Image 1: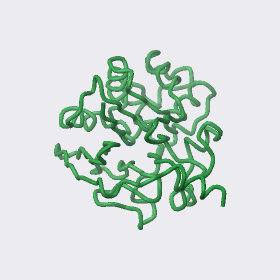
Image 2 (image 1 turned 30 degrees about the vertical axis):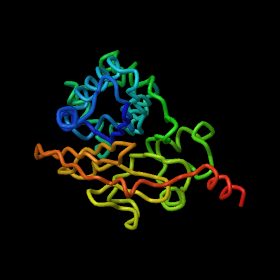
Image 3 (image 1 turned 180 degrees about the vertical axis):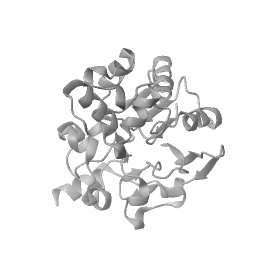
Length: 252
């Protein structure tokens, strides 16, 4: 069983379909971790949720994390918080993709999305950890386990200390488009590798790819809006980590 981790999709179902078509994986057996932000900005958010729900129903090794965009949608529907509907956040595009016009909404109760979508998003965890890595939407506080970290940090943090000084167990994250991360960690094809952290949110531009990384081999697969899927082997760039070295670092 191989492990694959997928960055922020942001409503681009056609790029997810491209990965499903082009990658050398077994989607019914391999472990696949989605780092959150399935929705918003792109025009196909309901289709993305449908695809991911179907994958998870067919394979218990599919792990789907909660992103800050899922949280904004939930906060809007449950508590009436309106940050999701700020144009820059992309919630209005998602409303349109559900066939809802903002001008028709007089009350939050007028926003109707399928109950199965709401329940699926509401069950999503804030992080995942296995023997190989920690997977989180936004990032960690160096030295603090994710189980002891405020969920708001896991969903929202943009912390230079994490990007530059995290040297713990391999950590995959999304949330911040990689072209905004420190230059010295940016790799070919736009992902970020520095210390123990790997950023793979490459969704920052209209022509940006959707990125997927094989955790064992560090083979990077990127589905571009042109219809082309590119592959780059990055095994030599995979961060090394030993628990003994980390314990010595923490003790010092």
